[in-house]
Structures are given as structure tokens and as C-alpha cells.
Length: 238
Image 1 (cartoon, rainbow, N blue to C red):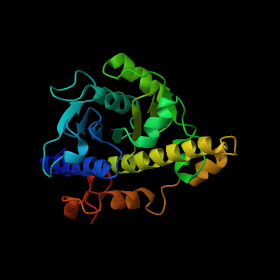
Image 2: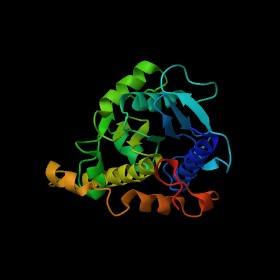
Image 3: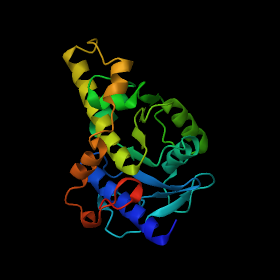
């Protein structure tokens, strides 16, 4: 990868980081990354994502092996996803309000609305309240994620994996909203209401119509690096 392309990808990581902060999907904790190639990925600075500055350095992390100095321990979750899912090019670890609440109950959202269908067959659940800071826990958590693009971790928020970091940002928004709907269903006593079936979910979970691109545009509107916005996979959108 050329230095220019690496910087384009880093700009995408920084924009995603700030978007997560503005949307309330992260606070002091959380991290996001984008794949560089089969063996490396780029992770946001180890600080509150909403505080990431334009042009700030991101860190190159190997897909296998020890984490570089200064990289947060739970970035091992990113490593496991990139190692086991060659289609994943973007990962976000976040702690949004409704996802945190539902995960604390040891529950995952059912496929009740369109956003929920993107996590078929169902959102994974890692039923362990301890922080994921070693390889064994990271492997167990990602195994619990299964084939889904989302994972809730009891007491510790959520993880999503997308075909790009732009897509992962949209998935983070979708998963938080799916958790909001699930909590509303539980509060109303209507959790037994019918849910979307597998066939209908497969049809609904479309990427056509710039679904994820429009969510990216919405969540990154006004970003200080947005004038040179990166498109999917770090390519220029012009």
C-alpha cells in the first residue's frame, strides 16, 4: 500500500472515530479500525474517539502477534475478526446506551425492523462481563459472534464487522437502534410479537440504493476532514 493510500485510509478511520463520538455510540471507551491488507490493519488513536484530531496518527497493527505498544488491549477483538473473516475490512468496538443496557441483561435484539436484518441469523452474545484483554477471551468472543456481523458483550457493549469501515459505521448505528427497539418491546410487554423471518430478512438487508454510503454521509456531516472524504475501502468518492 502506498503512503498516499495509507493516509487516505487513516483519514477514513479518523472520520469514523469522530462520527462515533458525535452520534453517542462511544464515550471514553471504544475503538475503530480498517484493514490495510491480509496481514495488517490501521486502528484509531488510543484515546476517546470523539477527541481524535484531524491528521492525528493512527497505528498499524499486525493481524497476528502482539499488539504494538500503546494499542488498547481489546484491539485483540479486531485481530481475531480480521484473521478469521477475510471479507471484513472494518471493525468497530463501541458502548452505546441501548446496546449496553440490552447486553447487561444478557439478551440480543430480535429481527424486528429493517436495521435488525443486517445481523441475520442473529446477533451474537458473549456472556462474560470481564474485559477482553487476552487472546483466549478475544477468540471466545468472536466465536460467539458466529456468522453475524454484530456481537453484544455482557456488561461491555458491542462489536460490529463490515465489508468496509464505512459499512461498519452504519452497522454500529443499526445495532444500537435494534437494541433500542428490543428494549421498547420488552418494556411494552410485546416481546412475543412476530419477528422478521430469514427469507424476508435476506431480502431486506440490501446494500442497494447507497444504503451505507448515505449513513456515512449522515454521520460524518460537518467533519473537519470531510472535504477530502474517502469512499468505500479508502478510495476517493469523487
